[in-house]
Amino acid sequence: MQEINASLVAAASLLHPRVRQPDGARICDRLARGRRPGEVVALATLTHELAGGRRWPEVGDLEAVTADLLQLIQVGKRDEGAGWAAYRDVG
Figure 1: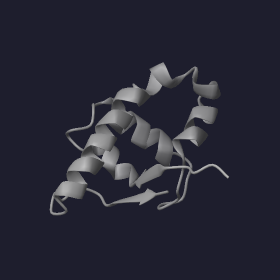
Figure 2: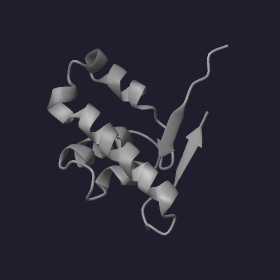
Figure 3: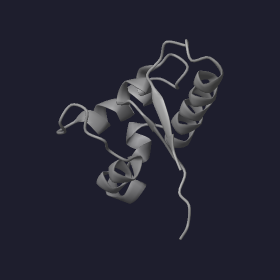
Figure 4: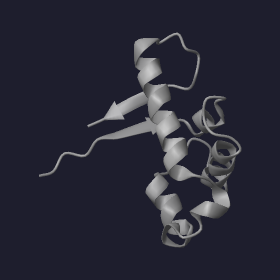
């Protein structure tokens, strides 16, 4: 069995000022569109919805936004009082 590591963040984390904008806001909008509040949606699902990823450039720079989110998670681990959306590592 292969181990899978993932980080789950609230969609609102994409609106953080340290996340590339307006890319983060556009990705957040796409994640929320047509879904119930609090629904967990993997970015892979959004990639599928965006023609297998071919339409990502219309929405935003996924790699840059993901890197920004991972950096925020590391900051959050060092400073739990950072005041941004909660995170949870799944491994």
